[in-house]
Amino acid sequence: MTKFKINSLLLPMKGHYFLYNGGTAPVVPFMPVFAKQLGFSSVVVGTLYTVLPIAGMVAKPLFGGLADRLKWHKKLFMFFLALTGILFFLINFTPNANEGKVGPGVDLDCGAVTLFKTCNVTDNCALTRLLVYAGNGTVDCHIDCPEVVGSEWNEELCKQWGLSQYCKSNADHPMVFDAKVPLAHTEQIENCIYFRVQTAIFEEKSVIPYCNAQISTSNCHVTCKEPVVNEVLHVRTEEASAKSWSFIYFAFLMLTSWISMAVVVSIGDAICFELLGSKPANYGKQRVWGSVGWGIFSVLAGFLVDEFSQGRTEKDYSVVFYMCLIILSVDFLFCTRLKVSHTQMSASIVHDIGRLLSQLRINIFLLWCITVGLSTGLLWGFLFWHLEELAAAQGCSSLEWIKTLEGLVMGVQCFGGELPFFFISSWVLKKIGHIHAMSMVLFGFGLRFFLYFWLVDPWWVLPIELLNGVTFGIFYATMASYASKIAPPGTEATVQGLVGAVFEGIGVSLGSLIGGLMFQKIGGANTFLAFSIMSWVLFCLHVVVQFFMQRATPNEWQQQQEEVKEFAMTAMYASPQDAIQMLDEQPDDLSRR
Image 1: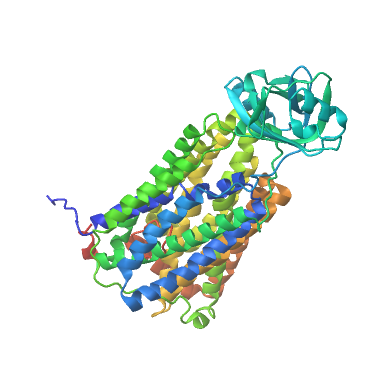
Image 2 (image 1 turned 90 degrees about the vertical axis):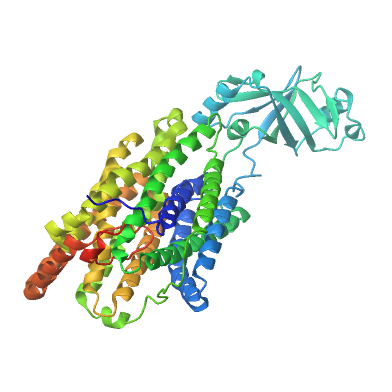
């Protein structure tokens, strides 16, 4: 009987993958909808997510080469690991793009009591939250009426409110003061909401505001310290300028954190392969713990965001940033135990590209990677955006659990789709071959996007996410292993780098940009319908092209099919969400774990 033995040398690496992916899982999937809440449009977000994959693609070989030259693999790895946690945590403090923006003017009425009212409430959910919240104490507000006109206000402010600055002349004066507003007196009359001003404070002088005559003024701006009130008073501008300080801060942190993540992944994987030594195919047994960490903590993060956001007008994402900082801090401590001697990394992904691109089958394969990247970019950037729009259409209560649902989406994608299909991908490729698997991925994306188009109740997205096994699990296994077989001798690393570059740097980037533009122009459902049609058209085109290639070169086709079937029988497929590197396993490698 074989005794199971844990390899202590690889234990810190397993822990790193689990903790690193678990630490980034609470933040990365929610960034597009977090940006939406900050006030950025789908076009702005899509443009940002066009740049991020390119920056990561450039950073990997750049810092990989630097690590090789200076022999600083662990130093750079640890530095960027710490930097990733810090940068993500700082995103939590991004100012809302709509902060300081006032909505339409409200009316201020003075008589036996002083009231301000708004009749511009268009968000029924905001109104419902306010009326439920009403009665919870007194709110501090700031009232600014820049256009107080006539002697009536001056006389009342001078005689009844005792404010000498309004007694000096009959000239028009702005009226600016702080107010105590008891929410228990909030009242809805027809389409208007009335708030009572209990106390007015002018330069630290408190007065009880009442007037002998019934007077009013319009175009006052009111800002309160309670978001549930501001949500009713203010009309939010969903599109914020990309030149705003808020966006510059957010974009800078996103860009630098993306670069940090790319470097951690690149050098971390190289360290892992160096620890594996002559058994590189066991990489999958280490990397699978990253998928487990991602699935667990993404579900937990979604639930916690909803829990900490109860009674709030907007989702409170601060818990996910603290989760990220804490988990990555533990990961940093875990990685101090990594034993690294010297790791060789390739810093070049473009060597011999001219010779490779002269081959038709490689060009077709790269085009397939780009088309799948387009769909993946839309999915990563705007699925949650679409779900939140569907939840809002379902009613106010639906938004209370939307983050829990988004966390469950990530869990189903990981445990229900990704992991099972990675385990059976070898069997699938053995049965149908890589070419048919490529076609299946395109068809799977078409079906997945078509179901998103028909989706009404956002909860029904969960069974749809099982298709992630085809569109992600089968895709990555097919892409990485097929690339390793078609690469001419001596260009294996080049092809793997090229595949990753065209998928992320071209496909995902363009998918984010096009998806953002289409979301704004035609809406989420129609965008997914358009991408569904595109995927099915590409599926048909791929089948036709491969059919004619098979007829044109039958001997080469048959030899290639035998090779990939043989490869599928021995390959160990990892979950290369961040790294694309698949290597054959030798028969005597099966004993080491």
